[in-house]
Length: 486
Image (cartoon, rainbow, N blue to C red; front, side, top):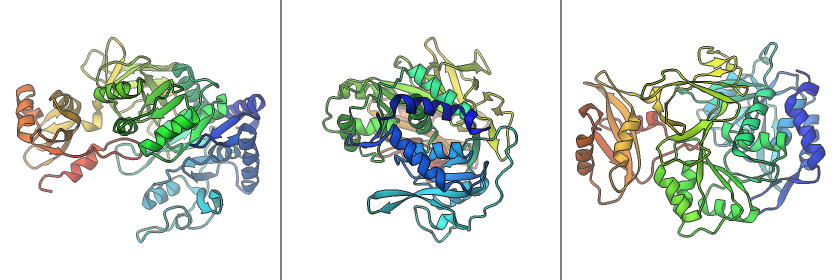
């Protein structure tokens, strides 16, 4: 695709004409980091550095929430270079594997300079030695190969997703799909040029890319960028910048609720939660403390936004109705839970380098999530991969968690399956609870409410449920951590 026909570049030209001197990016203190014209100037600067790269080559961007993100992406679009976003905190082995899978020939990285973090282009035969994080003893040499042959539909962006295995999966996206997702989000959530996004979620993640970066480029919606996730820093930043939109995750809202006192946030009009299910008690506690509702947003790296709870609903796992521009079809209608088929202009072209057309492609994606249709919309009740096989009986951990949470004094709960010699798998659970609750009391409650094969063999009391940078909890990681006999 020629640059003149790139829809994201065309949308940017419109934003630039209308908003040239307007603030585009603020820091957490409310200071202007970039105007729209400033973004363009930096894009021109980076474009000169990319002159030696060929169309179709892959370049990684690993700079955290740096204000140069929009400029780098625009510069790559103009040179028809494919962007691979990488988390700032990604492990060295994972980074090396991702760059090799995608045949990335260089990386834009942020390094500490005299004026703060500076973005540099590293084109080194062993890039892993130079990018943030240093070089560990188990690092592997980076094997750079020729740029992939993309065919008639070359991508603009490659998204990484862990999927259900340890190896990363890569998803191909063209500009028109990224633009479609941004349009779906802004139209469904009512986000306009008069809003200000508060960006503490990583731009390198699908959620941050779609809710922060593309709305700025395509719709002129400014944003604050910060990498400080401490609850007091987030609150102070919301106050200082007068942000109106906060795209967050449950772990953020939980930490905010734990503040002894929080200021009023009169300018804040929309709090969004994605990445993990939003607990009912958490939503109620946040509303009581800050006076704001939290609206659940459900999406996937493969297709962008899927559902959005336009009105809060006191129902566990509730994610609302399909977003504008998105069609959701139950594969097993009438059952207690079903996988879905998602159709949207935002669906990626497929996995790379090994496609899986049965799950992703031609505008269709089949997530692993299990959904239930209610009168008000959909709720997530589990994942196919999370089902626990107890002596041939399939147990949905969400059902176990729901019963645990019905016991007074339980704040959080997650059930998981771990290996059992006699039963294939057995159920265990981690809970955050009041100090006076015992394992025996909780198990007695569950035995009175659940079938025998659904009752956990062990319950572990923890101070907090561990989550990743994406705000998600891995049942597989918990199964390894709390293995039988460990």
